[in-house]
Image (cartoon, rainbow, N blue to C red; front, side, top):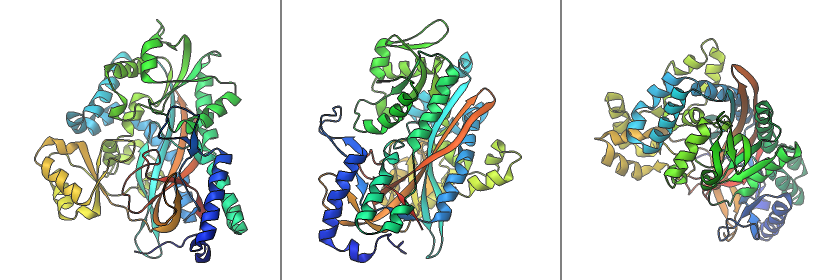
Length: 479
């Protein structure tokens, strides 16, 4: 396996005393810069906080692929938005999935109810993150391949706005001034907040608030706080509520305006509700429906949430499908399609049977993905064989899609996390790109790429996000 050269020379990487000293400096700098998380012992209190896990050094990323990822983001924004408005497409794409996946089926039922009633709000707000890995085919070339697009609760726009200064400082301390200057400015928090603010303005009610719908366990609260802080700078009030709190104090008035705790809500920003475990009882589903029916702007609305499912991602790779959304724009289709990895259906029928046979024959070439967000759900290697042998003869297999496994070149780095030993690791990185758009009726008011995120994990770990406890925050050093 070719290895990508680290941005740091061996005499630094191998000097244990220096590394120990740099790690201590780095942790202090992370705390100074606000790269923070609550502790797992007290996840709902800020009395004790620690640094969010991060890499000691930035990771090399080839310049052309980095710019390619940024350049295609506004097209992905447009694509997600168009899919969310294409009722027939969503119905066809998800037909087999909703038969076997309860969670997608429940979301789809809300979607159908809203279609029947008619939407109460013509303003649409999308904050998403498209995630990629670099597929290293040979020594020379790496190609950008999309892992997924997150259309709900896409995290780390806040903390990734604070990490560049940490790596700049570390590089200075170890005498790498030139590289220190090359760490890119990055402020997704400001861009995400700009879109939230635009939606709030268009809602046009001075006293209305932005409601952050938040999880029971809030270790990652500071990631949200940066975005809240950007809103408060504009004098836009925000409140944080869990599903149960909205259930207790939320209601719709006769004009379908949403009130929570006596305050009118202009925008509901979901930082929860993206996986089945978030809906601990029927009340959560009642709340989701009430919010969808309301006049508040939803980020995302139910159809945009569905546009981010794995099944939709797989259907988009079929010939001719992207053309449906970009009929006169072959260059856009080409730009988007260039990032697609091989994705294969497990629907019942000859095509799905082929996929099963292919996966069973060479499981190490693939990843089996269920319809889930939140990291830690994917299935690899011999586990693929175990799962497929169990479901191959039934419709249950349609709850999954199969994807080509992407093979990035490992880079050596040190992963800094509380209570973990300071050891050199072979690391793989995933590049995320944040998109933000606001549409009012037919008119796209804002459509931007608002920043990036690099997350790195030890190559021993197949799957997992930062919040899931596997990957750590990083910065790209363009090479």
